[in-house]
Amino acid sequence: MNELRSRLHVQRVVSTFRGSSWPVLALADGEKVVVKLCGSAEGALPLVAEVVVGALAEALGLSTPERYLVELPEAVPSDDPHEELRDLLTKSAGLNLGFRYLEGFRNVTAADASRIDPALAARIVWLDAFVQNPDRTAKNPNLMIKAGKISLIDHGAALNFHHDWRAVTEQSPREPGTVVATHLMQVSEPELVAADDALAATLTRETLSRALARVPDAWLSTQGADAAERERAAYIAYLHKRLRAPRPFVAPGKHVPFQLRR
Ligand SMILES: Nc1ncnc2c1ncn2[C@@H]1O[C@H](COP(=O)(O)OP(=O)(O)OP(=O)(O)O)[C@@H](O)[C@H]1O
Ligand SMILES: [Mg+2]
Figure (cartoon, rainbow, N blue to C red):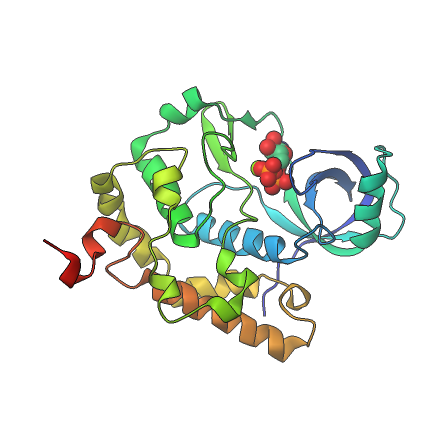
């Protein structure tokens, strides 16, 4: 096991970002951290997606804020007195997910996005298509920038299959998905294909295992370590199968079943 190793303790909540999941800015052991709370509507699953996709992004050489396990005490002091926030903090006492605060970064605009180097754009689109991240669109870019350096944030909606494992079939990992078509960065199919082999080769089964190993047991199962390990194996099997060439999310047009081709 190799869960996220650094564990910080929150001393106070400073403000919220009023994103859909109410991330908060907190002070924890002298660090400014953005904390995503396990008591929000979808529970710990968005945190699982953040940990796994963050690790995969880094494996692909993409920049994303460092993650920490963050302990939130009961009745944590909050400078924001909002009642709904207080409820959420109460429900979230215990283990949550923190991100290094990106000092001086701002959200990218459409103009910034159009200037992103095409090779970097292809890598980001490829990752998002692989992990089925619907949240990098013109409306909701989820990229931050400082002096030309791009950082990827907000992967909580990725790995959407984990919300209903019973609906996952043998075929599910082979579905192309719609991420490429709706993405903030419109990368052409040849650009994506050009990036494909090298990116897929980076994500070995070992890399997938290491990404899953970072997730705390309690976010995967309430039934203890063995059950959590079985959950990890299910994610790894799904993602490994999705990575098998030819990857359906890269060139979906090429995978029309034979009998449908004219
Ligand atoms: N590590 C960070 N450092 C600085 N600012 C951040 C960081 N993470 C998030 N933010 C800011 O907080 C906002 C909300 O964060 P994020 O998108 O992760 O949350 P969310 O609740 O999933 O939001 P939404 O669903 O509305 O996109 C971001 O748009 C960004 O401006
Ligand atoms: Mg967001």
